[in-house]
Image (cartoon, rainbow, N blue to C red):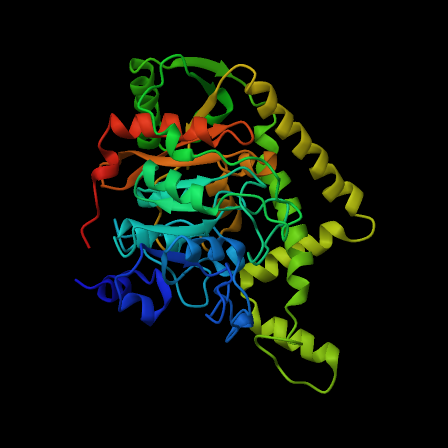
Length: 439
């Protein structure tokens, strides 16, 4: 079956670079549709950016081109990365290759689905509250969110600027380490990029966790808060690592319960500000009207989907006069508490082990009309973004129905090496990553 035929079933790639798919030069890679590629459609899966072709490459794209990668095309996503299911795209939902009736996760659902289905060996995504790790978990692949500031965000169309981070989705931990080598590094075009040395991450592909301390946070294993099959797989994964010589350490992250509510004040507030630029004046969709105000209103009404409108309204409200101190400022203080929780925990352990998602992939349409249920899909991934720390999700099991389950590791800032080491060791001593969906 051709990649085009597979994609027709999944709707994972929304734009193919025909010149690349016709040749076999370079490793093919899919690019999430919110990362700018010069002279190629980049729409954030939104009607409001219809026809937009950036006049420049994102820094990560420049690095990929210099390294000889072949950019296969743009992958589907939740509109402006607002979502956990890849259902809010103006191009229609992406499907999970393990069960096409189910979601692949979001917002980098197209990237995860295309890698899991074998359309490409690897892809780039972005992670604001779990948008790399959550779809990686639900599609049975490896997804890494690097430390905030490790990878340049220049050319990433912003959702929430203090949370967004570009990262790899791959079939193996070794591919993830290799791709992280390519895209990491300081960039003067990104004011949040940190000028720190970049290690060779492939040197951390060591099959050994002896003497590594693995933190087990009690807040990530609530009674009744996790699907039974997910909890069983995570517990078994912990036991595998202990048998390999890792030392379990019980830790506490006491402010975890506030992470989702904190995130859904900060992220929409930043999104409201960032999306103000999409008004029909200079690029994308434009609804002509008698005056500028009507033109802006008409363009944004027609161009934005319902979830985007919801988050703009939430964000604008929490930033408005009289509510800023009550909501946004308070959320920023809670964010500091969450970050401190992690820093204190890493005094006791090298990495933290958690589920990536509370459930396996749910059916398309199952949660789309219930925003709260949808938002809770990211309950275990959001804290890492608020704290700015790195995280990785790897396959660790399957449900009786054959759906993938993901295991998440978190590490202290700029210690991706510890994540790669523990994830690689687990991968080398299990075979979950070897299973592939039948398309």
